[in-house]
Structure formats: C-alpha cells, structure tokens
Length: 132
Image 1 (tube, rainbow, N blue to C red):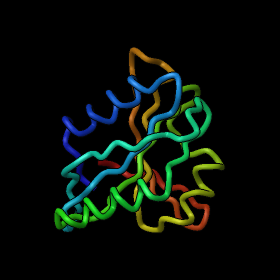
Image 2 (cartoon, rainbow, N blue to C red):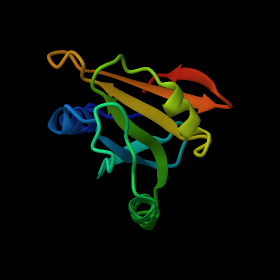
Image 3 (cartoon, rainbow, N blue to C red):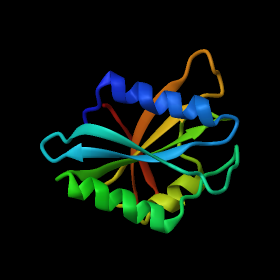
C-alpha cells in the first residue's frame, strides 16, 4: 500500500491525541497495484486502555460500509503502541487472523518526540514488515 505523508500525519495525530491510551482506526485504499491509501477513518477504542484496543463490531461494519460506498476497500487497520515499539504483539497477531490480506499499521508513540510508523502483513501468525 502507498500512503501519503499527510495521511501518516493523521495517524500520528490520532495516536498523540488518544495517548496514553491506544488509538485505532482503518485506512481506505483505492484498488490497484499497489493500492493507494485515500482516507483515514478514526475508530473508538472501547477498551480505553494503554495496553490494547477494541472496536465495537457495529462501528467496524459502519466504517467498512462507508469505505465501500466510496468505491474503495479496507486497506489497513491501524492502532498505536504507547509503551512499546511499533511491532505486532501476540494479541495483534491473534486478532489479525480475522483480517487476511489487510495491512496492520502501528504508530509507536512511546517516544513522543519521535513517533515511529510501521506496517505489517500478518498471515498465519507470520509477521512481515512492508514499506509504504
């Protein structure tokens, strides 16, 4: 997935605003090779926790309906890590099993002066970092 700097800045802003809790949301893409990110959709972390995120299923379905209504596809799920590096935790890996082919973007804000954004494909428990 290709994602422009202004969209990355939106992810970072969301992570900073929700800290010390994790933030979460999804990224819409225009289909293509490679897919191109076109919009960030914030979601509510119903866990309101610095250690994990949860999203209400109805909110996820509503976001996906909005994305598809715009002629786009779900390209990525994003969340922040407020205490650790932006690498998928075992909880992230387990959750990703329900979303094959979707990228996982993690915004690391443990060092608030220098946020780090990384993206991964997670398939069958195997984690592979991908560039954007």
